[in-house]
Image (cartoon, rainbow, N blue to C red; front, side):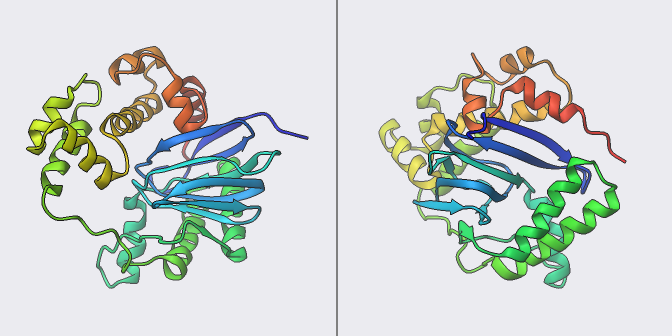
Length: 275
């Protein structure tokens, strides 16, 4: 029997909060988007097909999905029954303590070159984390579980040799334009303004920005707005006001990227009480 599309978000009681989700999808078709954190998920049934790192990937039951922070990706069902998965979104800061322990005080942010892995032991660790997050277990238990999973993931599956390298030339100026979008998510920024910051024509700016960041400028702006929207929703700002503050005219972009509405996301976040 097909399950209806649904995504239940929670904030796990660990390391100042880690976002987790329990989701079932049949019709959901995620557009290309990014997360400020990593995506680490386990497929519970069905199969998902998704784009990441320049190619398409297939994740079936019991496989683990890995998406690095700021990796552009999408997602949709690969089978008629859809797919269900549980996932978490730790930020690079959440890996900081792990990496400093592993590498003698050095901050080595992990990079996962594989998009889909088969690791039954890690999958069971992740399922334990998700089940304990559902009942809002104590901070000590949750942080112990997260620490063990992060360490295993980093030791067995991370790579420091395949981290994307910055391209030469205009990359520095393109980063200035990207930072401008980061700083003013609510502004109706003109293409010419960004092109001027980058020192490029509008045509070359669009091409170079997409080549560097795998998203067109307007698509990246939507991701910046979504990030700010989530932050405001988590602290209780009304969804209607969030739309104004983040430059949205409707909720369609939010739902297409996250699989849920702003009000549903806010309601789920507001239930969390830290122990």
